[in-house]
Amino acid sequence: MERLEYDLLFRWFVGIGVDDLAWDHSVFSKNRDRLLDGDIAAKFLSAVLAQPRVRRLLSSDHFSVDGTLIEAWASMKSVKPRDGSGEPPAGNGRNAEANFHRQTRTNETHASTTDPAARLYRKGPGKEAKLCFMGHGLMENRHGLLVDTCLTPADGHAERVAALHMIEPRADRPQAITLGADRPMTRRTSSTSCAR
Image 1 (cartoon, rainbow, N blue to C red):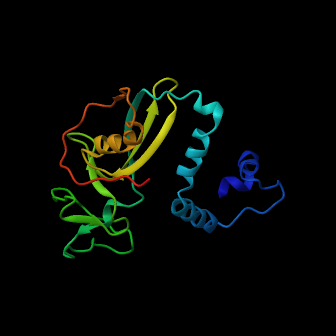
Image 2: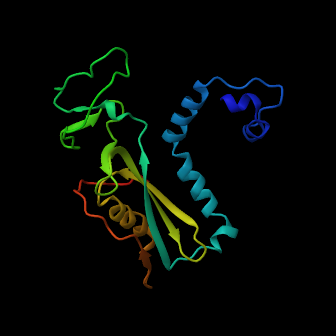
Image 3: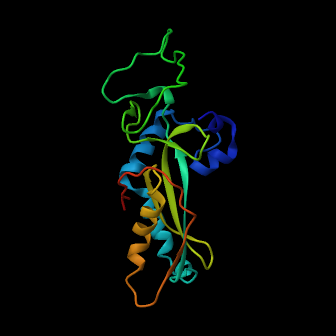
């Protein structure tokens, strides 16, 4: 919102004139919710892939899948025991000091109060656990174009499950297709499904 006050490129991109007033900050929150509820990103990707000029570029034989961690918009201080026990952090204010060292927290025993769907996930040994989701993309290998996406809860099998889910509609054909992916990491599992 601050950049809209002085950045002409931002104003041009969203269609605001030089002398027009910028929107109230709540406009972004309302529109974000509308975009998520309306599944606009998936509809936009489908419309782009349906264009004849794009369809000619797409391979139907060779694909790759990759995933990335997407940090949740939730503080680690929002992670509380599921059973309701636990003491509030000492101190005054909403953002009081808390020391979580030597405390065991798992997805089975704890959840975020601000984003219950986010899961504690650690990228590797010795790394800190964060509240995350996993984003997955399916690319065709001829030109490296993105052909499908999926967001799942973070766990060690999410990328493989998402890959199978995204490649399944393309597998109903007589010729074989290939699917490349990263080496799987060992993690505890939970059920994962992608919404189309």
